[in-house]
Amino acid sequence: MTDTATTGRALPHPDREQIRLESVLHALSDPMRLQIVRELAVVGAELTCSHFDLPVTKSTTTHHFRVLRESGVIRQVYRGTAKMNVLRRDDLDGLFPGLLDSLLAAADRQAGRIGAAG
Image (cartoon, rainbow, N blue to C red):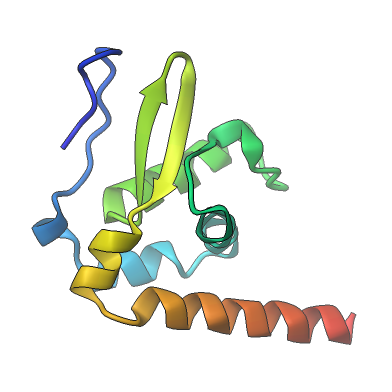
């Protein structure tokens, strides 16, 4: 499904039945992409790309969002000039029950462990 009704700028997304476990796991294997997903999960609403303060170049940030979108982890739509991002939690939970919660909990534990070690 794409959002072209108001903007004419459609971004390709896989349909729910096209989302593959290996693509999701690949998308979440990168620390920057995992950080994006963790923030989206906490907020539980749409966030602009500019909301995320990642220590990488703009082109690299764009790449990370594209990988997340093409794997089916997030949905991106234009709202005016802003590209909005939202976690596809319903799709992921429906396809892979418990996976997202387990990964997010593990990422939180890891962040606490690494933070405590530093």
